[in-house]
Image 1 (tube, rainbow, N blue to C red):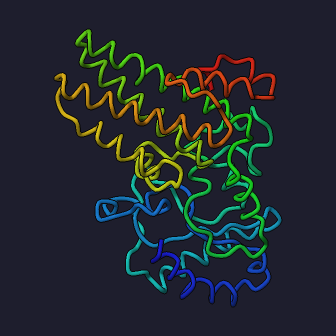
Image 2 (cartoon, rainbow, N blue to C red; image 1 turned 90 degrees about the vertical axis):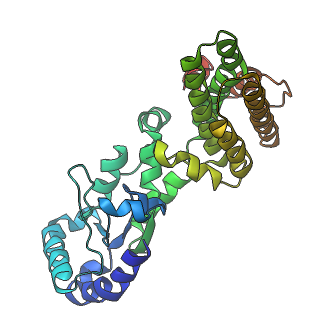
Length: 308
């Protein structure tokens, strides 16, 4: 990200101003979307595919006819001023190029101006929403790209956030608080691991919802969660402890049970702090049903609490 930003301001922006002075007034540029670099997580292992200096150019719909000219300009720019690290692209890698603002958002979330109602929001995969707001916008001279980005950054409509939280509470209770012990007693070790995996996934999802931040692709979800201000660090330590606890003897079982209880207590406390659920009941189905009851949207309220 740092290398791409530096290249844009050192080489690209001066040339854009000179060759496209009118379009420059309406253009946006940055690095957003697919790729670990857009989340700030690229490292030495990232360099084997889809890695290197690059940037998007986004134009308003009225400038669509100029896209071929801007693409040719960008190709020539990279030929004349090759960056220290030229971006590679694998067979399944995402392209970074020139497009309209609407086409960029449509390619990620299906809606050129972002979803406008609850059913539209429900159709968009959460990790795609995370990609639509990650990275960095270098310039946005018309403000059109940033306007949609800021709309998405406000997170889900509140009723949908509550619906998702209710479902995650139900899943956390069903996996960690209920089925983990039952599967352990039955010595069903494969299902024990499945239960813990589903518990982890639901807890991570709940922490993102409590922070009003979209959860990214599963590979980066835990890492991103540990950076979140609300519960991220505390719960991150507990989930890591569960993950590195080896074996399925009584000592391991009791240790994991303790960690699960601490995770659930932290979530219960935060739900109360955010006035989402007031019950202090240890079993999170209680909180899930309470959150469900506060939803105003008739369709979402009519769904079972465990459904998103």
